Image (cartoon, rainbow, N blue to C red; front, side, top):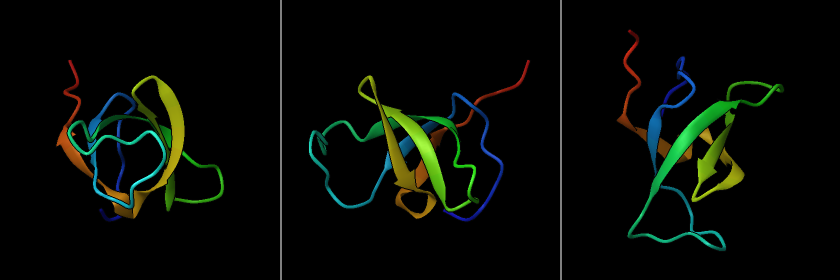
Length: 67
């Protein structure tokens, strides 16, 4: 995924390397925010756990619609 503005709550699909606790059957994560050191790392909620992942390892599954 390229650098872009993601809204908090955006549903993402994790497509990167496997990590401990990752289930390929449920790759959905929720965007929490960008890392303060730049735009390449993001914080996500994956199955109730906060994880730091690379922006290159996710794609948008369901964008947040503003109301």
